[in-house]
Image (tube, rainbow, N blue to C red; front, side):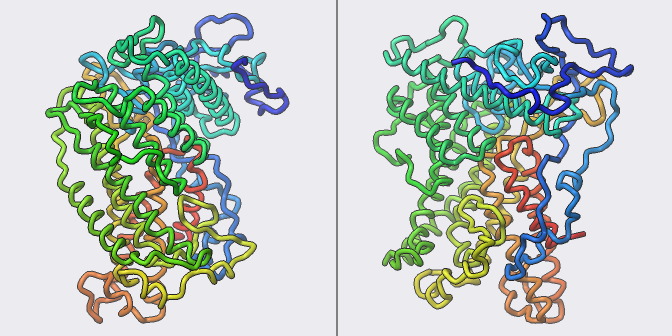
Length: 619
């Protein structure tokens, strides 16, 4: 099967059909290397890279969609219906010198370049590989590909200057292709988005085919455990037997972040786990290499996350006695494995919450509840609280050496994600009791209910009556509200502290080079844990509504448990102070989400978060 996607030329936008770079008098310094006719322009990207603007091609929310029966009846009404969301965070004016015109694509011309890009953009979020080889990490140096007029509307790997040689490098290229090239001024234009999306999908399809072939080739096991086949050595410590497992893990993340396809994410994650188990990666001892440990446990992390997203049981539990492979260790100042165990325990707690809450939320369908729900919920809450304390007490001694920075960010990322997931588990346990799952979003996100406009407001009739909840749940509505408040703000802080590629320091020689004032580089991450932001934002928005309703009705005493030492004389100011804290937490999560706008799978989340935020805080 040819690695190509045919598109009618007439379907491409004008910039795609025209092809070739536009060059003004100020851009003569940017030269492209000579290529055969009808090939493309390959431009070496400038070393200084501008920040990715916090914008997208998302369509505005229609204010007419919001019903007056919802707590957020004015959701979206305060937005200009002709003003897209991206205009709210318009990027600063940039000098046109060195900027690229027309649709362009980030490309790399060797396995080594892809590996370096992996450590800049993927490793800080998901450490699949051992630490980078060598004493220092080279700077990311992408090339820029621009289709010629003759190739407009056709997407083929043969058009690119280099085709990755393994399933892993192909899968990573699918992620990297989504990142706009440096100085791409048209990165949010439909044609640019289409070009990146099309090549990313092509890389993903090729990676899947290559992974299947590699699995067939490696059925002989670990006979050649060094596994470095000529032409496919991606990392000196990485056996090629691990390539398809890691590729399937990357494709699982790609399917969620870019495609928003939770079912396919789970399918790829389960493929990675079953392949790893076929290779006995789960039954290794203390002699297991760091590459083997990370291949197994990152696959488990993604598999657990896919199970939580699909509200299904994982194909293997972390408590399964067959698993003997030790956790990986971050080799910074001291070898640290604690963040890995914290994240896995947090994910396991989320799945436990799903199992406990499923009978309660399904009452209207089956009419039965678990008899031991009260005891199970109490026990699970205590367990999650213990995990939260462990996260707070986890102190990472980060290394100072230049090459330690990559591992520092990876360790910090796993730790912060563990904190966010732990508090997400607690929110999921208490959210239903605190707010009865009243819907506020237009689209379906995670396990949150959404507004079904054709049946609203009758859809709220299926919610259990308050006396029923009092008799079957071990916490009162007030207690669950307070717990949800604390955990949601903790999630906001954890997500704000997540590291990203923009935190990687420049080497001394690079710091001395002149840089554009806006050249901070792409600072996004892999948004595969962003359901935590949706859970926390839901709680914060609902509490803002509750506080404002109490303020307007002059019945603030009902909200006293949420306030800090309230008094009748100062209760209004106490409530407004809490509303401001809730606003800051919600805004922080929106900013965190918008850093990752290049991934189209979170577009619906951002649309709903923006609509809710501007409804509550129009100014």
